[in-house]
Image (cartoon, rainbow, N blue to C red):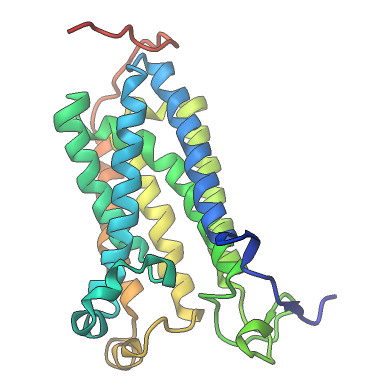
Length: 281
């Protein structure tokens, strides 16, 4: 039996002159590359134009980075950033919020649906959320390599001692808890799409995604350390931190989408398993 795990990982994978590759950034990039291939397979399966892939990738990358950063700024440390607006652009110093990224991606998908695909937003959401679950798990592994966003002290045998942060006692590796939940959700959604044709029930995959991402997040927050000092007063007043408060609407939306998808008649589609031919203008 393990007594504890001493964790002192270097957040930097390697440096080459002024160029530095961090584990966090690598996990982010790997997630987007794998996600691109997954969505490409889905577009081909359903006969969507291949050129939509690059456009959707651009929308998602911008929305994820800008939305996650602004989510942290407005939801967690507005007092600081309102007094130091120049610091908002310094993303490399840390400070990304998944709730902000989610909101920005919702906006991005609707814009993509209106201006590019001309299809219902559910058509894009039910594909995009599948690799996003994978990306979420990889990002949490990046948090682990950064020795950040861990939990309260524990006497469980798998507790991590984050010595890089000056810790001497084992703490809950909440990054791993969340990563395992997200990887499990990714496997479930892939099974639903490729084996159960769940895309024939618009919004079902998206609803399961919202529940599967934000319900574990809500529960794990109870053993996670506060991210900013202001959350201490919030927990004392309401018994929840900012991450939990922001998760509740997405959980409820997820439940509503699942109910909506299941009471609507199933749509039976034919899958050509090839990209649609490009139209010349």
